[in-house]
Image (tube, rainbow, N blue to C red; front, side, top):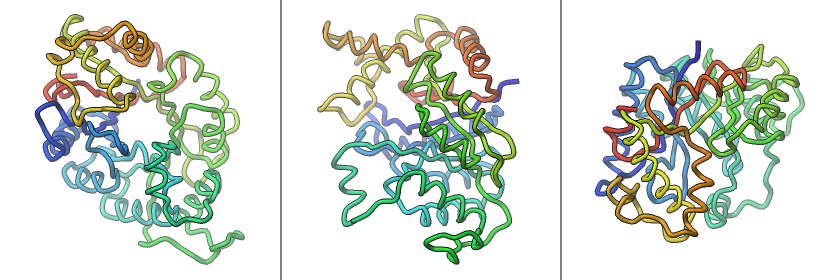
Length: 322
């Protein structure tokens, strides 16, 4: 049995605004819960003007309070920008208010240079990513026994449960960190499509070490899914997604997710078509039946029992219908 989860970017649709986008994320989370999805995660994006999801912890608090039992998580917190101690306390507060419902998904995306500078201004020394993950483990387990540069420091509030901890990635290094630290591992198939990730996931399982978080390896495969009632409708939505991805990767990105109508009217130059074709390999496109077959195929290939869908298509009604 494959469990389904959702990762939402809070896209700002053409003609809408960030205020509306965040409330639409709330609406989608409620629907995901009613439909039986396992998790609902939100992203951390900076300088992507067409999405409102810049602070997952803040949005998670709202979403957890707006739902009753679905797991709420980050996909993910970009840990190199932050203090592990502060991240641990943020998520302990979330977990204290919503026990056994909170997921901490972490990544290390470098983001834009200016974003890096602004988020790390004044810092003279950074800990390695591996050390930051080790620090999180210490704070979530209240470990004051083992030698550490802040050995007696504990994260507040003191609670009896802990968030689930997940490492996000596309490469062997991140998978190995997840394995050594005994956390779950999320492979971003949408960023690295194809079957090359199978070996990375296998490597994670091979080197997994049981921890206070998990006694055996757990994986999630995340992917873009563009679903329509017909193949034609799915293709129309995919064209808008094509244009959004092109905008995000260009210097002059507009502050909205383009509509299907805009995508049809604008079209692509032959040079742009090259990028569009490359990005198409990152998506599953089609009817629910077509996409579900692909999801099952990917789940079987990766040996996972959980898929995280990113329904990043134009208009909330289409995201809900997906």
